[in-house]
Image (cartoon, rainbow over all chains, first blue to last red; front, side):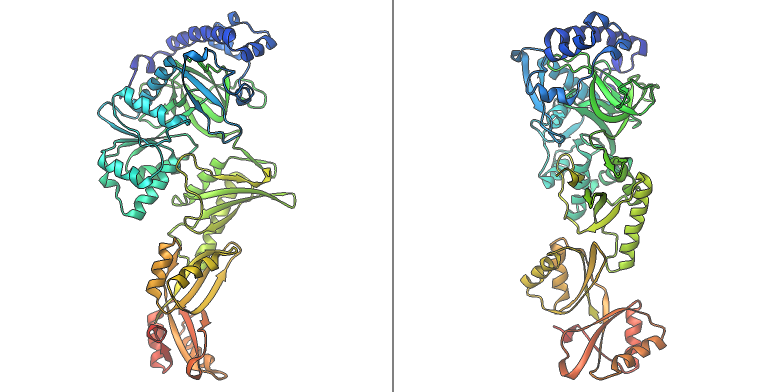
Length: 433
Length: 140
């Protein structure tokens, strides 16, 4: 097995928790002294920094939410003077006003280390050629993985996203072995390969690290087959760090959280009570080493599960089971909770080639309507009207039974839906207008 | 036999026109056209003077195109003529999937296009029975 920092990644649980507890106590003092909005929250519930000594004490602390970052936009939640901040990033603002995050030199260093660990955990080393095809800029994806690849000593290829044919040329010419990009961009590159007659045999790719949006096991299979690689899931959010808060190892059975820097919890999003290990709920993170923006009990809105069993890879770091969706993304259709990821999973289970779709929610005569616009897959013989109809009916039936609410499938022309180069826009909720 | 151009279209305003624009720009003349539709999509079937070129320009513009062969049958322009031609098909247990007429009736004849499952065998049977068939060459 390949590790970047074996002593931490395989540390006995008790040792790790001891480290976490001492870092947590120090961090809470730092935040209380330097972040006025958080100090006010703690004072409100009557918690003092000296009350926080163990990990169990975490539950006494108030939560932080995206709204706190918006209310204190841009720099109000920073815990260090701006003279110590050397970089900012901003969230994509997909769910509202954008938020700004900051990093000190130490923060950038620890981020690079986490990202290096991620690349190492999928088998990467300084012998690899890592092509970073996340967007570079305010989005954390590009620069985050870039610094990680450099820290690992790999040949780092700062491709950024876009210019898809050039991406494929770089795979070929630069002998890329590991690629980092969004899963939906990988799917669109595979489509382009088919169209332009480029074969995966022309590449030296062995692994890919995919994140920044939810994806399914069906998409994983599609990407692994299409690019001839092993596809790994990575997780992160700018508020906490960026990509590599957690990443899968070669066993592909959940993403190991960098627990020496971030303590994860699962809570019930309604009661806000912590849930026992193995239960699905909202993922919450506390940053115990970051300096500039050390968020405490930050509610990610992602629905996930934590697994504390030791992994076959030897790592003791807790594993996160793939986020099932975001509480933000959850659609309420006729009173039923529906995650877009459930729709995608059912669709791809039915037809793995059905990769270009848009979920459209609307309200007609006070009734919610749910439609799936799907670009007609090329295997359907459009001369056979019966085949088209059967395909639609079958897809409708399978998705409806998976989500518990009726969906109408509309087949649309190829290339009629917008292609993504970053995070794919898969849902259009017209009720909000 | 004649190469039909079948095109998948969304059933919404402007899609048919978009497809026809491409054909017009490529100077393709349409000899027959029919649409089979559902609430959200349809398949347009066309007979044109140059099916190879039509297929090429439509495919280049991301349309899904299929090109099945159909049989062109010429009958007299008088009562019972279509029945007489099709009777031969039913006697030979040939099921007609769909048929539609060609635009215009040159030489006082009526021309129909017939899509069947076993196109080649059916065309043979019709020819043997003395039914007059027309070909792509008659349309160019």
